[in-house]
Amino acid sequence: MTTLEPEGDEQDTNMPPPSRRARVLEYALALTTVTLASGAVALLSPFVTATDQVMIYLLGVIMVAFRVRLGPALVAALTSVAAFGFLFVPPRFTFDVSEHRYLLTFAVMAVVGSVVSSLGTKVRAQALQAEQRERRTARLYQLATSLDQARREAELAAEREQLRASLLASVSHDLRTPLGTIVGAVTTLEDRGDALDQEARDSLLAAIHEQAEHLSKLLRNLLEMTRLEGGAVRLSRELGAIEEPIGAALAALRHRIGDRQISVRGPSEPLFTVFDPVAIELALSNLIENALRHGADPIEIEIGSDDEHEIAVRVRDRGPGLAPGEQAQVFDKFFRGSTARAGGAGLGLAIVRILIEASGGRVWARGRDDSPGAEFGFTLPRVAPPQLDGLEPSDD
Amino acid sequence: MRRFLRTLIGSHGYRLLEAETGRETLALASSHGPDLVILDLGLPDTDGLRIVSELRGWTQTPIIVVSARGREQDKVQALDLGADDYLTKPFGSQELLARVRVALRHASRAPGPEPGAVFRAGPLTVDLAYRKVSVDDQPIHLTPLEYRLLETLIEHFGKVLTHRQLLERVWGPAHVDQTQYLRVYMAQLRRKIEPDPARPRLLKTETGVGYRLEAPDSE
Image (cartoon, rainbow over all chains, first blue to last red; front, side, top):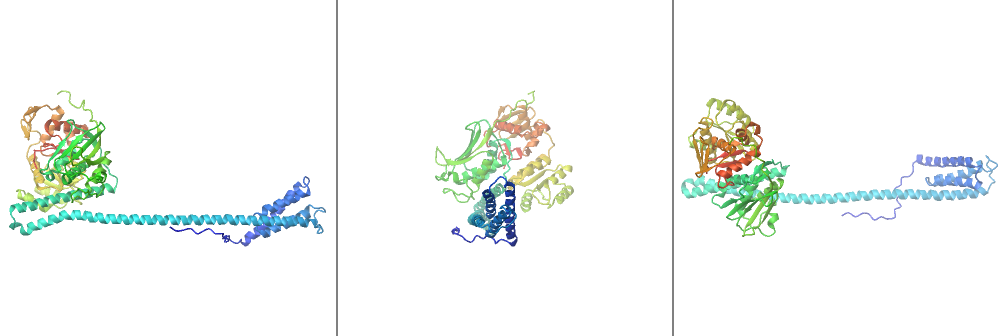
């Protein structure tokens, strides 16, 4: 943090020396003022005493002296006295040099003029100083803030770079691991295929299939996340029954599900919401895969509506559950829970949150009340199905 | 992709003709009159949808379009333009063969419902002549619209139908945008026919595209 200079008693006023023109003007001003004062006195002379006449000239000298340097101020004083003596002291319009009493008048005027002049000069100098100081202070402050900002931005950028580098490393590892298995299995089949028995070959083929599906899911999530972060998420809004994307997600994942125990429970009546079916199916796929990967059977999907305004979908498993404190974090990008098995890229749940929140719902993760394991859930706004009266043809 | 298709298709007794551009596709289609066309919608140099509509201008040969995930709009448009079915990449060989079989089966039959036939799939039995429906041999009652919806799906058994196509056939061309009715009716139909409406075995939801009546465990 830069320090400001201590403010000393600065004699250096940085006042520019007056130009020749300015000096001439000051004298001109002095003479003009005296002329004006003379005019004023001339106008008022029938009504005022001689003392007051001098006062008018004195006023003129004060007004001029405040705005000019010493020289013109003294000139104003001198010419005031001369004008007064010449114009108004009888015999008028003569310079009677023997009038010594006006010497005192002149002396007083001169002193007043010089005092006022120096006062005026000082005031202007101080004002200029103050202005300069203020400007300097403002400049220093600006400099300090912009340095601070630059430093902070540099820190943030460095942090971001570090984060990106580590994420890139993590993601590339997640993508290369299944590829490694695939290439390994394929090359084994190519080189040694004949020497392997059916069981070994089937096992290798199954591994290739499984890893390829896993890779497919990782890529899908990466692309989806890039798409979501790239710009406005534009989801369609259509009426739909929540059971449809659930059924579609389970059907699409049937290979992954295999023999695992997954069941769906819901009310007898269909529950409707307004959503983007593709987005919600993706969210459900990620939740189901999360349960398959990190949870244990039996996995239950429950559709419910606790009140009339919301549909809730809960995916419950019997696995190790969540570590305390991870309930909110688990939906963060690239988060790996402490109970999680390796292999996920950490994007699936983050995508779930983004999609559900963009659809007007909320997500949560918590432990189960009734048994060990985790519950992941989301809500969507519930809507009433449209009225169907009058749609059926009248003759049944 | 083509290598995989070549091997797979060839191994099932079909012959594969390959084209790399849209123009080649149209040329091959017109010169050889294939029994089925598999068209990748994602080719950068061709507008797959244009190919579909051009082909449909002069041939009814079945078209299966191939597209990536997230391109549901493309699939729907292709289907509404006359494609018969679709596949989403990455897909497995079983899925491909199932679609091919269904497409060829429908192509070889006359259009329209078969009068007097009884349709059976899994626990579902439908007497199309008497309009009687039963599940596990228990008769169930369907409203006229529910029946018409089921009948349309049976007519296209195994093939996908877009929301628009279903709405048009069941409710009429004036209602092709009212997907909310379709949703409600499909939910009702599922409840009457499927033991587990959230995990249907017959009445499958093709997310973002439409619905399909499928043989149980067909893949």
